[in-house]
Amino acid sequence: MNKYRIHILCPRLGITDRGAEVFVYELAKYLQRDFAVTVWVRKTKGQSSMLADLKKYEVQVRYATCIDESHPIASTLYKIHPLRKVLEKLRLDPMGIEMLSFSLVCLPGLFRSGADVLFPVNGIWGVLACQIVRIFTGIPFIYSSQGGIEPPVAFLQPNVYIAIHRYTKSWLLKHFPKLKVVHISNGIDLKRFTPHGEKIVLDLPQPIFITVSALIPTKRIDLTIKAMAKLKSGSLLVLGNGPLKEELTQLGVRLLGSGRFKILAVPNTQIPKYYRSASVFAFAAPEEKGWGLVHLEALACGLPAVVNDEENLRSLIGKAAFYCDVYDANAYSRCLFKANQKHFNSEGRRIAQTVAWETVGKKYSQLLYQIAAKNEKSN
Image (cartoon, helix red, strand yellow):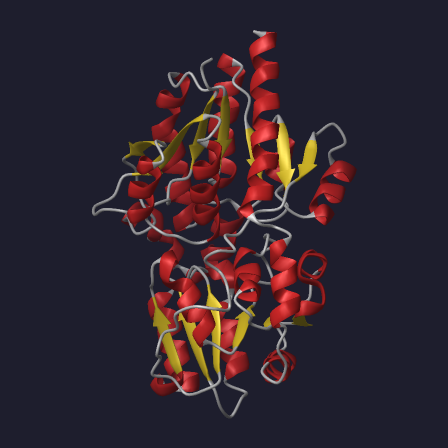
């Protein structure tokens, strides 16, 4: 019996290895047991260990040449600060332009793909591309809310909208009653993210507060820097890369000094070592209602967490974190100080164990099989 064909769009897989990319990497490896999986990625120079690893699992990789976020077409208008909010709202910020360009380039290939289910993981532009393909070919597509609640996506009615929070599912069903919504959390690799293992020697004063994030506006790393500036001791380590690297470096050095602040871009495979070498995990991102992958990875490594006070995170992390209004630098800094005095090793690990990839992957496999089989019967 031929396997059903699942095509996943994830342009930055193999370029960056943050939340959505790690999600697709782990999911593709799991799904390949039961499906013929193809991932569509943006073509770039250099070799990617993540893509090489997927090929070992016999996951097919297709490359698309498109505009990236650093291209003048994508970045020029965004440099004009008064336009930033408008461009972000229209999904035409540099990253949005990259996602749009990628989706347009992939569109002809998706029509010819012979896929049984499409799975865009590049926001509204990927969803629009899959919607066009569905209109003309009938190929169903699913969507997972990696960035939180996305009404424009819900409006386009994917065959199944996967809510990674129960709150998100409730909200979507209330506002889009005809939409099929299921709740499936993302997963983490508990064999890698553990309190026990190798650490990194860091040339930073203790305690070390760590944040892991793309260096983009919605992550609001500047809020964490400003809160850290209220503390008399300790340092901030930021793991990540992105268009705001220079701007954030200047802010960090100005408020904390070069001896208390550092930004490093490290492979995802190395991140557990840095978690184990830190004292507290801090993450702001008040405008982004995502799943909390890095939160659970940090908890699995035994770190206490300080996060924005929002319902999604309270339902996910529970008592294993300190919650505050991250816009209030004084309140944020007080929580950072308190978190360094208390540890949640066992509680954080227990919460992380509820979303192991074996459990999550099985749910995705069952859902995709149902959708593909139903579409096959209707044809």
